[in-house]
Length: 159
Image (cartoon, rainbow, N blue to C red; front, side):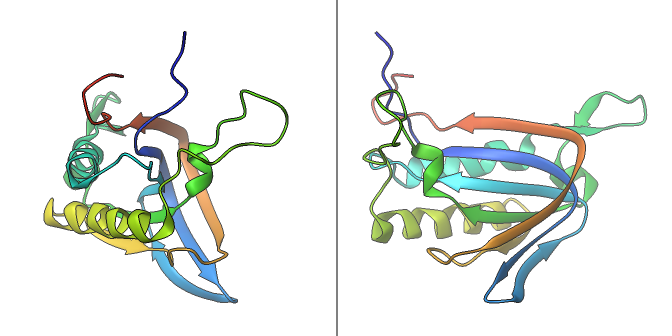
C-alpha cells in the first residue's frame, strides 16, 4: 500500500527568466536560473529544508560545453526564484476535492520556506522570493523545458 504522505516537495524549473507579482507589482525576479515552487509538509523540519536547499543548489541540470547536464545553478551563476506553494502537498486520491492535511500550517511552513531560501543563499546562490501566503502571479520562460520534482526525506527515513 502506498503512503500518500510526503515530505517537503520542490518543483524545480530551469528558466531563462521568471518573476512573481503581488498586487500588480513585481516583487521577485531572476534571469537565467531556476524557479522553485516549494511545498512544506506537516512533519518537515530544518533538516529537510537544509538538505533540499543543498540538493537544489548542486542539481546538475544545466548543459556544459558537451551538451550534457553537468552544471548546477551555482556553476552557471544563475539566480533562483522561490515561491511557496502549499498545493504541492495535495492528496487527490479520494474523490475530486484535494485534501491538504499533509501541508504544514502557515506559521510552520513560513519558517521552513524562509530557512530554505537562507540555505540556498548560504550555498552561494542569489535568491529572490515570493511573498509567503500572498496571492501571486508567477511568470516564467521555461528553458528546455527542464522540470524536476524533488521530495525531501521524511523524518524517520521512510520514502
